[in-house]
Image (cartoon, rainbow, N blue to C red; front, top):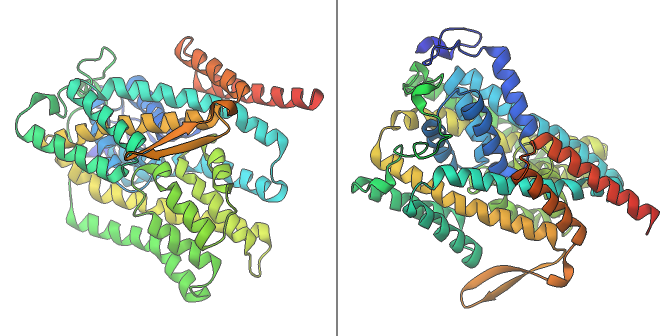
Length: 470
């Protein structure tokens, strides 16, 4: 299978179809990137729909195996999944193309919005646009929870793991890494003991009429030659990736010293890149505390404005860090023009945040592919996926509360820590838009593009109506 990993080659895949070349791969990953709204749940669902159901480049079990591994890594799991699948199909070049294209639309959108925010603050039409888009994003996220849950929760044991995961994080604020470790241990020892409910590949798609078997796809069930571990290649690749990731940080420290804003950004977000288990939401409190309290990059509450930008633009939610880096450098530009400093600060943040994602995949994925048939490991990863469904459900509910209600408090007592909305603060316009978006998605199966466009137009229309009738 060595030939299939070469870009622009056209050998036949396992199912007899010509292998996708460079132009087709770029077109597919660009399409995925432009449709990747709604956080990791929505992004993973888009990838699954296009790569598994539509293109049939890989099957259900292989997709979930790759996803399970990416869930274990620090950083944005959806972007890492894109790198993994791109690498699996077209070697290192394919992984780079998939990973970079996944990030570029969101990076450009956040940069433009950050400039508008820094120069003009709360612009009415921008706020109205976000207002409409948030309702659509809520529907997309909930749809993704349902779709992923149907594929991952194949038996009562997996349902119980998802429910326990949800209760742990929603009611008791349990840390995400602890939930993942517990689920992985349960799945590992359960599968090792021979319990069929923890069979890793035994039912990822088998019980679903829409499941796609690995054998019926382009990639098939085998392992490409380039996906086998190789010490020399891994060491060389690791050296290059480490230099690309940490080299700019070391250079800035040497040239500007440790007290410069660009040095602070490079060091802080390089550290963050290795501890961001659980995605953007899991790390927001950590970033906000440092950005507001320690460095003074943001004013209180501005992190939520940045999150609103990331929620309603394509790409990983962790892209909110670009907004943080932009504002930090914009407000402390040194000898540069504020906008120039802001742009450089945002780009630096994005670089040190995403560069290590390629390192984790290119070094770890060959070993994960090699262990794809390992029963205990597959059981652990399957259990982790079930637990993550509960975590994503928690995120969806958290998002729903903050879309529909203007004020959301926290109840603490009896060991509980639960988000509680103020019923008097309900935003009826937001609730109506969210209900309309949910009906459009679940009843009429409206596609993502028209849904987002319609919701944005409704948000702008409401804003225009408020200007006419205050």
